[in-house]
Every structure is written in structure tokens, then in C-alpha cells.
Length: 437
Image 1 (cartoon, one colour):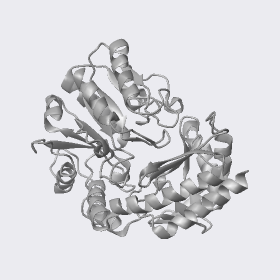
Image 2 (image 1 turned 135 degrees about the horizontal axis):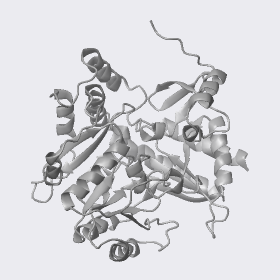
Image 3 (image 1 turned 90 degrees about the horizontal axis):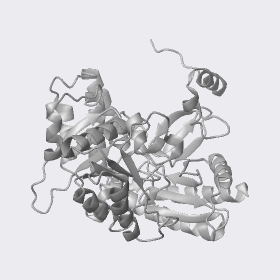
Image 4 (image 1 turned 45 degrees about the vertical axis):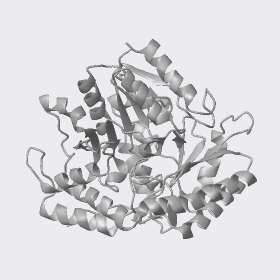
């Protein structure tokens, strides 16, 4: 017997407002609450039947499409056979997924780099584990992280998150922040070198001189789609390693072909990380994360127990295997490059017509529009951003406000967004900007 569900907006809002914690309620982005009842590929329908183009991917979790039939069938078949199996027993499904993920990693110039995988329940837990792994391997405590970076809401992940709205009291220490190499409004201007010099200065004055590693989002997600300029990731790795540390690539949002050019965002700079953290798109909505590390880096972890209760859950891992299959068979990385390129052109056209748009940026299906009060001063304009955001809803578009001042519209749709959606998205944004003024 299926339990009844009250789909009314009023009933759902009453229960949420009454029983959700205040911090969760703060995350409601719209002036009027929304309920989504159905999703199919790149589209969503609310409880009243209105259709939307999903440019949010449910916070980048839906990679290959809402309720993709291949992913749903793989998970359902596994759940019907064995829903969960603790990691103290062997199971072939997570073992296969681990092998398949390791195969996507670079093998190095000599082809001899070996990779191992530890599954977690979420990206935040994966970040926590990567922090422990880096400190265990190097014997150093100090970590470097980027301002404007987001790595998760757990206490440890918060400690390396450089956005004030996500930071709460009681975080652990031994973290030093460096300026993010934002090519639009970075404090050192454009280029990579000034920001690499800042890493060296920070190591010299804000750490013991020896670090466990540096965490870098290959493209900052919640920070407003901030790409790393050429030479930055490889240069950051060089400087961290010179101080005894590791390079940890956070691919939670930029991974799985989202940038179009590569499977992983770090590949854009030719860097080989020591540890790669991934989640969100790995399960297409099923809870799953992973830490993929060079085998030698992970080896010291064998001295103590480490597991995550649902980390290698066969149902979620079956979904993960299906995601990799769909990415290959439906050529979604190539689709992200082509459709994202076409959409980026239209966004640049919008910039010519709407002076409030200060910057358009991104690659593949990881794009952003940043709003400013004045293009010369670059003063952020969160009020206009909020107004455009509300109008996008009326235009049938779902996206998110992001960045440290919430003055950026972030677009990270399912990778199946099609060419025929580009006009609808661009026209809807144009209408939203016009109606918001």
C-alpha cells in the first residue's frame, strides 16, 4: 500500500515551514514556494502541470537527465535484488564502478599511475575523507583553499569553504585561504602568475611552511562559475608539492563531461592530481560520492578503519555505472560542448542588449551571467539578479543565484540539454531581463 501524499502547495509549504530546520528553510530561493512533481531529461513539471527547462540540474546532481530510463532501470533492478550491502562484504557492482572510474583517470607520462576509489554518501563526506587522506599521507596539518570556493556543509568541508554564507561556528582549523584567480574581478587582475605568487606568500606566512595540500575546484561552482586560468592548476600543484603537500581536485560540479572539452575539469590544464573528489552527477540524483586517489596516496589509510555507511551502496553504484554508460553512448560530453557553445553565444548577445550584465562566462554546460550596477565599477547587483531570477520562473526557466553576493545566475543543466532548447532559454532570459527593469 502506497502512503498518501498531499501534493497541494499549501499543505507542503505548511509542513515544510513547520518541521524543517530554519537553516534549511533559508534555502528556499523563490518568493513563492515551488513543488516539482515530475521530471524527464532536461524538463520539470510543477504540481500544477507547468513545464520548465531545468538549468539547475537540481544543484548539478542530475547529469544525464531526470529519470533517465537507463539509470532508473539499473537502480530499480539492483534494488529489487539487493537494496543495500555493507562494505564488510564484497559486492561486484561497486567493484565494477570503482574500476570504471579509475579508468577515466590520467595514467601519467610513463603510464604507471594506479588509482583506487573510496565511495562515500555525498560530496561533503568525500571532501572530509580527502582532507584526512592528505594529512595522513603527508604528516602535515595545514591545508590551502581558495576564497570563493565551495566544498560542502559538513564541519570539515566548511573549514575549506571560502563563502561566508556557508560557514558556521565550530569549524576545525589549520586552513589558510588564497585569492581565487577570478579573471573578471580578481584582486590581482588577470592572468595566473599573480595568484600563484600569492600561494607562495601564503605558504610562507600563514602556514608552518609545510602543507598537506591545496583544494581547488577546477571550475568554482557556487562561487559563480569561476574558471581557473591557463597555468593556474598546474602551477598550484607545483607549489603545494614543493611545500610537501598534495593537489586535490574538486570535480563535484565540474566533472563528468560538464565542461565539454574534457571528462574532468582539471584536464584543461594538463595537471595530474594526487586526489580527485567527485559526487553529484556521479549518481544522477542517487546519493553517491567518491574519492579517487593515487594508490600510493591512499595506502596509509589502510592502517585504520574507514567506511561510509551507504558509500558503496549497490543501488546507488548501479546508478553510477549507468551514468557512465549513458555519458558514453549518448555522447553527452560532446553535446555539452556543442549546446553549451551555442548557448554561450546567445548569452553574449544578451550582454550587448542589457547593460546590467557585467560578465558572461563558462564553458560547456557550466555557464554564468553576472549582474552589476555599473560595468566600469563592477559593483555587484544582487537586487536585479533576484528580480531577473523571479522573472525566469515566469519564463519557464529554473536556475540559481550564486556567487558570494548572489549576483550571478548559474546555469548547470542536465547534459542532455538540446539545441532546440537554446532559443527557448535565450528568449526566456531576454524576456526576464526586460521585465525585471
